Amino acid sequence: MDQVSRPLLIALGGMVALLAVWLVALRPKPVSVGSTPLAPVQAIPKARAAAAASDAANAKVQAATGGAAAATAPAPAAAAPAANPASAPQPAAAARPAAGSPAAARPLDRGVLRDIHAGKVVVVLFWAAQGADDIATHGAVRALARHHGKVAIHVVPIARVGRYPSITKGVTIAQSPTTLIIDRKRHARVITGLSEPRELSQAVDDALRVH
Image (cartoon, rainbow, N blue to C red; front, side, top):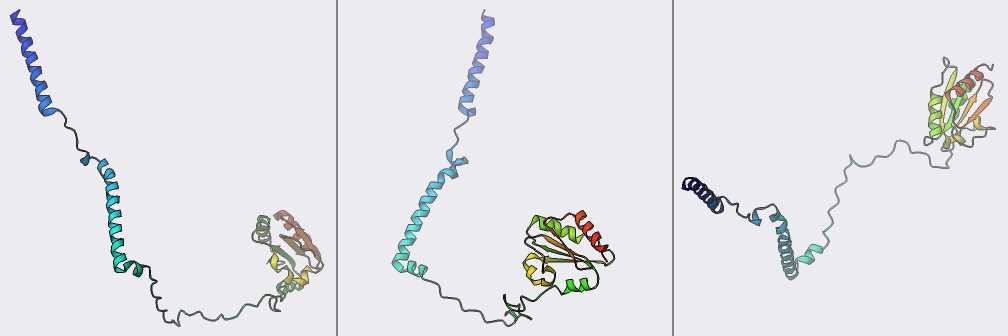
């Protein structure tokens, strides 16, 4: 019995010794809050308080020395830079005609009339660049075949329709897009609204057959 209990006592004594060593030397120690990442966050209120105290002290000093009045006084206006002849605006080469003047109402249909007198089939599109139908019709008109110079294309902003009196006389143009196809006998076909390429090509072919 003594031979069996002796090893047990030795093992228990070793375990007690290890426990004592762990409690004294190996047990983790509590970490100081100042060394954790939370320390800067907790220090912010103190820093704000210190900044507020510093601002209050500076305000008192400025009030006593008149620094606040000097800080709020308007700064003297900077001297105007000397005029640079090179950067000065230069007069326009030709002034634009004022609205309502004879030059502003001058007809612009000379090129269209020249093509009509030359015996060509003339296509005139009155359009506005902001409309989807206008843009589609503009592309279709531009893509028309010229038939070896027998067809002339003119694209005109709808705002200038009044400056083409010779071709709009007797023709109602109330909206954009509006396409005029003028044959060799000066008969105009009016296509109002969106125009498809096939429709325009057929109208041009019909005008070419007129002699």
